[in-house]
Length: 129
Image 1 (cartoon, rainbow, N blue to C red):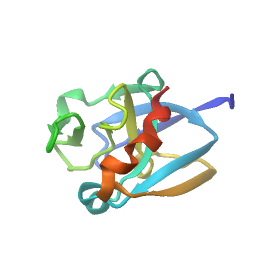
Image 2 (tube, rainbow, N blue to C red):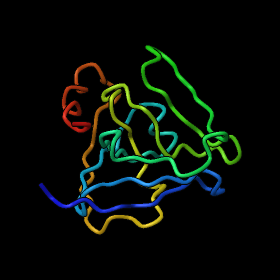
Image 3 (cartoon, rainbow, N blue to C red):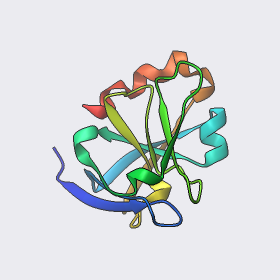
């Protein structure tokens, strides 16, 4: 297994700060579903144990829709969505790579057809283990 690197991230205004342990080389998904497309979210799904909220819990707001399994979290101040609990991996966390303070040097972006989520979600199931 590749060694993990600690990355820091935040929302736009900086009241929410977090750390995530992830490999130096990461694979992320670019999803074409309505919420991801509009938010510009690049998905880095990791086990929850690799994530730590450093500050700003009181500034998080939650949004759910459809099945209510995914817990979309937004900053109440600036509106940015730095991470959320994904429906595909409710035992993990999905980090928006665009919210990392230092972007990993090697990123492979994979297209994910979230418009047809039910047919494709199984391809993400291993990411939080």
